[in-house]
Length: 264
Ligand code: 6PG
Image (tube, rainbow, N blue to C red; front, top):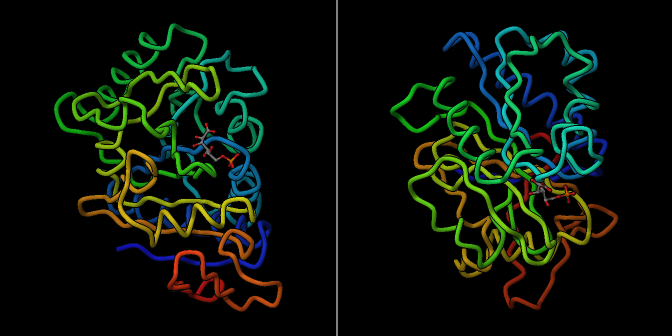
């Protein structure tokens, strides 16, 4: 099931996303005794994590039952400004009573292949050695080129079917990354995409309603076998005009948009 919720602005999206994550955490802990979540990197999630770390949401989460992983990581040290771990640490992890052992970062300071292997071992320790890890929630962003996590267009990792984590060299960034692979992302119970900004509007429409071309638009790979995908986007990314009405773009000929009002 794939649904889209359009929020008026990034602040409203942060509030809605934090409330959703806290609710999913509560459900997971009551049903399975813990909440396993993989956090997204980039800029969009910061206000979401900051809201989650603040009242009322912070009080609602049993942080000692939460296991935090990462959807991907830049191959930089954990204190580097580009690090997804550092983003999460500043916006969330240092603000909530999460036991340090419950944070499972990708060791960006290591050789990429070794970091991917170590991360996969960590996943096996936490989820069990045999079956593919089934996260309660995986948060994802989407780049304006259609990538998600570090599944970038035309990279071999898009076709990885065996490994749970893999190194990827991103040509356009001239940088190494480590990412969860599509099979793990698609095994999740819940996937939430967080997308804001007018610069994402065209790509959002192509990914959601355009032809299925995952090598070009890797975010299209995310189709969990039994899990649920939700898109939490702001009006700018949804291509709405200021008054909140759907804009009718004709460049793809149909202008079809599935809308739901904020939070309904
Ligand atoms: C990363 C993310 C990446 C991100 C998108 C969107 O490490 O950068 O995992 O997939 O979610 O690039 O980034 P913004 O939120 O900064 O637009």
